Length: 258
Image 1 (cartoon, rainbow, N blue to C red):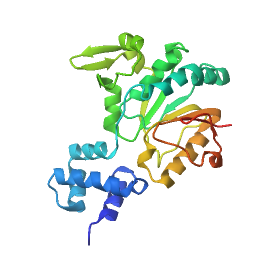
Image 2: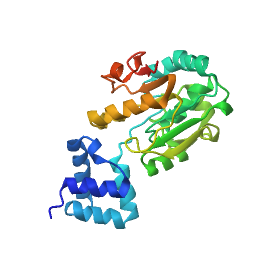
Image 3: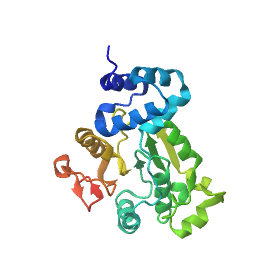
């Protein structure tokens, strides 16, 4: 039997429930081949055996597979718009007990940014963000809340001073902010989505998915939103068939459900 990439995709799904068919093959295969070469393993079958028997290598594989590029207040102009227009609009429609989901939240930069942004409009103890990612290791990093200087460079100064403590060359976010976020493992391509959500934030993640998988996720987000709810996507993304799905386009990055 030839243990090719088709075999590998099936073996990985059985092990992790991550469906590699939904990722761009050329890009993903290149990443995986690089990792296999790093461990001087010959072929997909031997690598599957390695990650089945070595917990550390397994965790490394999942981390390597999931692309984690994140920073606080990424694209500050879009967060400025959230502060001036989007949050006030959500509060006027739904009140201050907002149900907000940060999907594919990576190392926590985004959900923690959301807590800080909301804190200008809502008392901190009333804020709750539901944050999910497929990668358990990344969620552990998010719960730890330790970030590089570069990662927090776009955080408004008032929040940097108030909510971050410098530890060596890193910055630790305060427990006040951390306590407002609930982290949970979730697979966008397989697991059930929450319902009645007032805002979903999912940015610069779906660019790694096939067009079919993207389409499926955007439709599921639409079903997940409450009527008048808002979806906030990344600067590298667009929903080409947004009208067909049912969204209104508020601007390049914000869509709402009528």
